[in-house]
Amino acid sequence: MRYSSQVKPTSYLKANAAKVLTHLAEQREPLVITQKGEVKAVLQDIASYEETRETLALLKILALGNQDVAAGKVKPVANVIAHLRAKRAKV
Image (cartoon, rainbow, N blue to C red; front, side):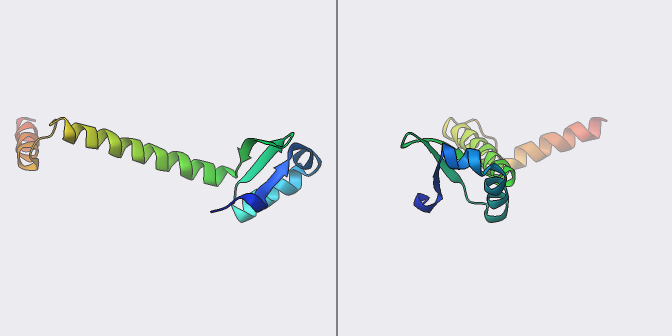
């Protein structure tokens, strides 16, 4: 996805803050903010931000799981189920 049409200077953001926020919420496309011609920030709606954070958290969990597999820190599912059943029987 290209964001070249979604680039605005800080002066535009200052003058049109309410309009920008409405557009972000409706279009759910990030807005690239520039200052003196340089990209300084990316502004996005809260729903997109939360989705991104959730996705990153899931990817981190997946990466940690892959590291455990690579390190041999895994057990056969049958062993885990047997352990849980034995533990439940004791209660």
